Image 1 (cartoon, protein in one colour):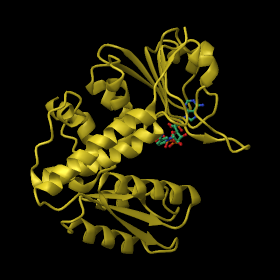
Image 2: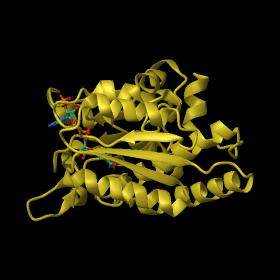
Image 3: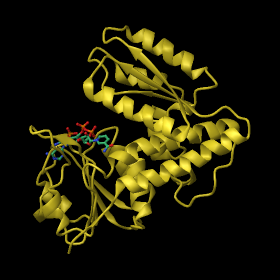
Image 4: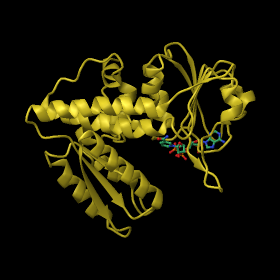
Length: 301
Ligand code: NAP
C-alpha cells in the first residue's frame, strides 16, 4: 500500500478562501472588520517567524492585525493590563499571546486574562473545559486543523480506534477530547508510556505530536492506518521533519500528512477561522451552515 499524501497547504488555502469571503460579507454589511491582536514578549527567533506568518495570513484574508510587543524583561502585570485594554476594545475580536513566554511568567495567569469571547487560540480554561463538558467557544487551532483535515479527506472518525501520541495541553489533550466528541475510541500516549508500539499498532487513526524525529517507525503502524504527523523538528542540517519516519510509514499507511505542508498550514488557517467566527458572533452574522462545525458539535453534546 502507498498512502495518499494529504495536502495541508491545499486544504488550508480552501479554508482561507472561505475566510476571505466571510470577511467580505462582514464588511459589505458596514460592520467593523475582524481584528486580531498578537502579543509577543521578547524576541525568540521562532516566535518572531510564527508572529510574522500569522500577521501575513491575516492581511491575506482581510483581518486587521495589531502587533503588541514587549521587551523580555517586561513586568507580567503590564502584559495583563494590556490584555485588559484589548478585551475592552470592540475593534479587536481575537487576542493571542505567542508562546513560549519568558520563564518568569505564569503562563496560565496570562492566558486566563484573555476574555473567553476573544480567546481564539482556545487556551482559556473555559474553552478547555468546554471540550470536556460541552460549550467550547473556540476549539484550539492545531487539533481543530487536524479534525478539518480528516473531514476534508472524508475519513470517518466515529467508532475508530484513535491513538494520540503526545499529551500536551495545547495539542495532545485537546486533540484526544475533540476526537472523543466525534465518537472515536481514544488512547493517549506520552513519554512515560511503556511499549509505545503496543498502542500505535492498534490505531485506525494515529496522531503524533511528541516533537521527536522518527519516533514512529513502519513496524509500529497498522497497514492501512491514517497517520497524522503534527510534529515539527529542525534537524542539525536545517531540514524540517515530523515525528514519523515518512517514507517507511507512507508505504504502509492509507493516508499520511507530510512535514512541512501537512498540519502546519492548517493551524494558522484555523486561527483566522476562529477570529472571523468571533467577529461574526459579535455582529451576529450567520455563517453558512456546515456539517463540519466543531463548535456546534461540541456544544450539542
Ligand atoms: P510538548 O509540550 O513538548 O509535548 C510533547 C508531548 O509528547 C508530551 O506529552 C510528552 O510526554 C510526549 N512525548 C515526548 N516524547 C515522547 C515519546 N518518546 N513517546 C511518547 N510521547 C512522548 O510539545 P507540543 O507543544 O505538544 O508539540 C508537539 C510537537 O508538535 C512539536 O514538535 C511541536 O513543534 C509540534 N507542533 C506543531 C504544530 C503545528 O501547527 N503543526 C502546532 C503545535 C505544535 P510527557 O507529557 O510525558 O512529557
